[in-house]
Image (cartoon, rainbow, N blue to C red; front, side, top):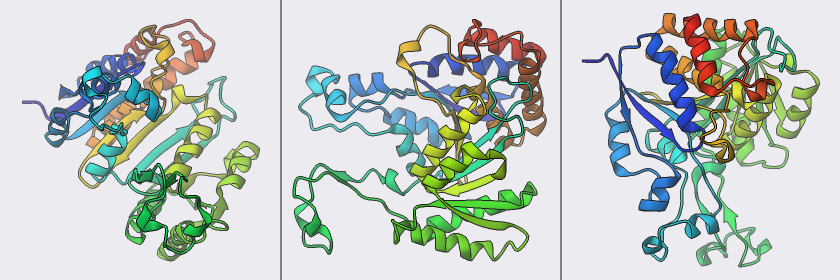
Length: 363
């Protein structure tokens, strides 16, 4: 019997290819795991009206963690248009299966390390090492949206500013969920000897929701007198990350701001091909590369798999397989330093699997 059970969710687009590449490295490491393949993504939305079938949820419930490639998402009109004809008039609405998994399993910590590899010519600066913590289950990603203002809401204070046909989304920030993500960020800073935490909000405009998040950050920072708390607005930090990225080590924010900043930071270390992500809860975790499904590259094996392989390194760390995680990281660094194997985003011509095999050989 295998030591670990891992839900393996390639998805679609380049997700399938980078997952294939990742398995080459995990198999070389001889990770004692059983991989349970799960159906997820656009094909299952089109054919079944559900991008996250119940059978996949059952796999998630019976595994230690999940590894995910990427899925395609499209706007409302296109999502309905591409449904099988017999499903088009059934009142179905597309939802993000990734957001549903995060909420279903309470994966409240979105953790995205952005670390520059030495000798990577795509680095903005070689010393960049920024970790982003974002709350993962509420904020703008609650999934509560209306195509027009509900009748019962029209009498609420402030709603008189809106036309009745205004589309609205609800942003929810709770004290409890703010406390636990901010606490997780400070604990990570303490464990890794990080001396400054930067909380990112727009509290000067979103005074209630961002105001609560900032207030909680200030309260919790008092428990960590050796760690400085810095407060920066979302627009200002975008400028400062370009001007002086070495001024930041750990950023804590809400989910939509976290998505924005993690893409910006990914570009500072060479692009999304080097970016990885973990959605982590108290009892379960979900690991993935940060990039999307890139449908135009699907089947071409052009995508850089390093982000996905780094996501598997995060998974190994989370499982407690620290030695294997460190070996994998060193192998990736060795291939980048050598500079012989490069995917198209690295100005090379090597394939997704060429890169995976090169890393595997270093192992």
